[in-house]
Length: 170
Ligand SMILES: [Zn+2]
Ligand SMILES: [Zn+2]
Image 1 (cartoon, helix red, strand yellow):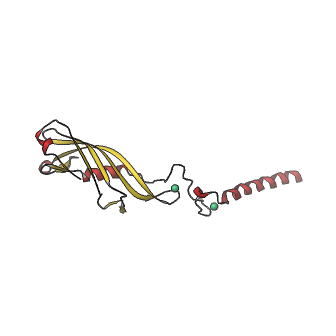
Image 2 (cartoon, rainbow, N blue to C red):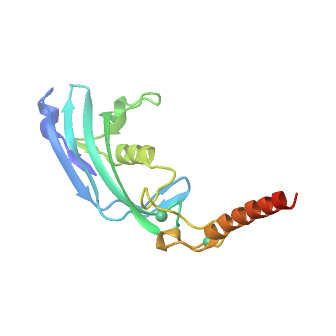
Image 3 (cartoon, helix red, strand yellow):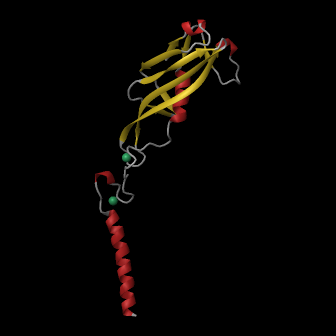
């Protein structure tokens, strides 16, 4: 995710557009591997203030995951935006929140992944209307009712019925 900034370095205060698209490297998140589905994209504007680069970026990544409700495999697409600052690595200090750069190139990977993982939801669903699995028999309720729910209603009805019957007997 290398962006050339040789022009921007020479023209302080002038915004320069950039764009990158390509395969995303292997990454882990919370100890589990992240399987990317398709290329990552990042584009935006960088401007040099004579000391640091300000990068305003719009980014996009898709990854494979499973639906938290029905367990089906799915691809989650994330679009996110961020603003980060870069400083020449020799001026980087441990307690600033700047990303280092060297030469006339910015490597946006670290900023990209830091912000991607911030945006990554803990759980994903294949669709907001996903009905999930039946807690009793495990059937996928998106494919139709399994019958368990009806039994529950039946049980409630029969309880009501016996209540009514009891009433009659009194
Ligand atoms: Zn689902
Ligand atoms: Zn069921």
